[in-house]
Length: 325
Image (cartoon, rainbow, N blue to C red):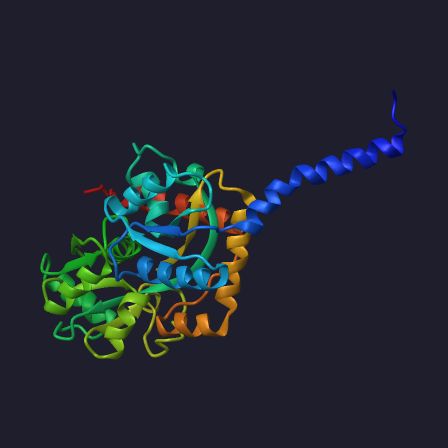
């Protein structure tokens, strides 16, 4: 029997609506159990701090615990591989940072492709690194630091939270653009790097602002400059590196990702909730206390940003000849 066109269209529309119900229900019901956020770095560093802030916000908003799990090592690659191998159901998330975009070039033989296998969910912040030294270090300005380095080749140890991290890349770019030499000393996170900087075992660190601001304000570390093109609102008296090294610019960014194939409804809901958090006055105040500023974008735009960052840092790595540990 041939149905009239109107009845056929009504039945087709009803069928489409019924087919959409399970997918919508996934987002409406999510989450029904605890969610883990895998962080590829040690506790106390910027990725860890920001993941915990986002996780607490999501826990409060969505009624289930969002628990941080630190899986440090291989410049964040261990955490990425853990997430890539996890079920794409929204219950395993990844704390994203600059090194994740670096790894594609730094570790060419990985078992995953970062851009292909991780779905961008939401950004959290985009911040400057801060060039900090121990207060006993003789240089009080960037020009003085450069002059000291040139007069004392091989005597400056530069800390970083790992090969290919934003601080490492900031330092390598600084070395290239000033012609100085520094010995790179990688750590497994910002906290141990700062500990040795405070103790004088290393002399300089292009530190994440969220991990170093309290020490700068307390006078335990001396800030020489910030790495972004403009000054940081929380350190208005600190100049930029580009004030003395024209064209220099590095920013650290953080966010949340998920295994590729995670339902779009879950990704959209998480993006919406995280962006709501970044707009919340209470969250803004917490980020400001860390020297951070919210980075509000859609999941699609965050994906485009990550792709561009991956290409950008590939050029720096190849030019500087950076190799993994």
